[in-house]
Length: 299
Image 1 (cartoon, rainbow, N blue to C red):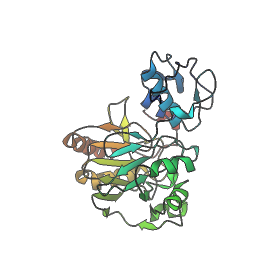
Image 2 (image 1 turned 90 degrees about the horizontal axis):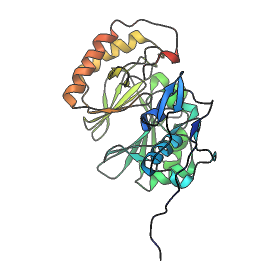
Image 3 (image 1 turned 120 degrees about the vertical axis):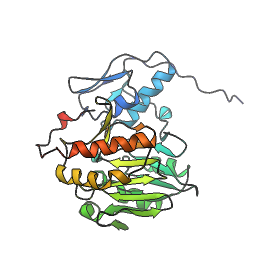
Image 4 (image 1 turned 135 degrees about the horizontal axis):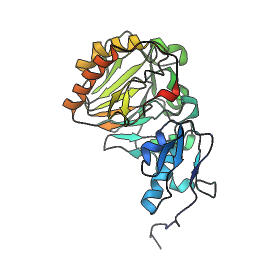
């Protein structure tokens, strides 16, 4: 019996088609191969080895418009490595959904062996089955209304509890657990929900083990500024309310990993992240409402 790993020939002619929405996910995963050109992602060079090709496959299977493909036009399903570990506790689900504007989602391991899903990838029975091989999913945590599209379906498939805040309840009216008000609440051992109205009325952060912050669309890491930023040009409810939320909570937030729905991920020492959050809260005080403008996002 031959147990040797399958050897794939290197695929060439990778490109990004016109459906790209400039969501930045592909550039996060393959920054040396994909860049931003005229407000959209472009392949800046072809892969030179199998490791670089794996990065392009990671980008391709995360892309919500499936815009990234080799010259053949076909993605080999056997090259789909999702979910991808971020570390020993968190996995990136990939397969971002067009129904959540291409938002990233995560699996959070708990010491019991159970998993919690934060926001959701596109719906797929095959993905759900794959996730269950890691462990039972007990909770699906929605950060806000924009990311609610597949929440009920995944929760039903896993027989899990679906969480959302009352401010965005109309986006998922059949949620099993409804968060209320603005005070933090421990929803599982080591996992805290912190309501943070601003991006939407019902936006929530989920903090785990004082190490991980799943920030939804409330704030993210910007490579262009090298700092934590708010998406001030894409705030659906109130940028002033978001500033007030940050002022109220920044001193109490403790984490190393920033894991947003949109924008880049980043790990920094907890003390540094605390300083950056205090500085973000101070900068946000000066922000005022502005028209929605996706092109102004500082990726």
